[in-house]
Image (tube, rainbow, N blue to C red):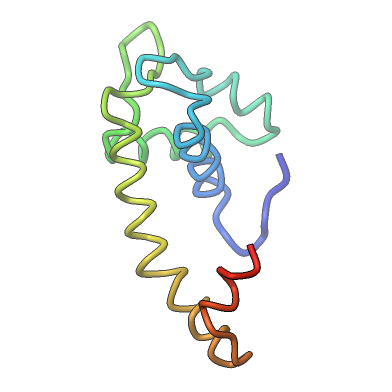
Length: 114
């Protein structure tokens, strides 16, 4: 996994897991790798992965079954979809609209060129 130096690694790992849920690659009930296993796979400290898993757990996206591992929660896709839409509308879209305005682009122009 390649990391961007402009964003915390644990958040980039979170984003990757969220994308896998949205794409359907990970579904409710699926087991995800252990903290150590995932850390070794992507080449990061297990503490970083643990921070990601704690965040996802607090968001209700994953849950821990003691002694068994971490699993994708029921309803995780809906949680991710709602939060991703909100994040896009509040954080990303305003920048896109600003850039379009600076470039003199009309939204119709963009959608007509599909």
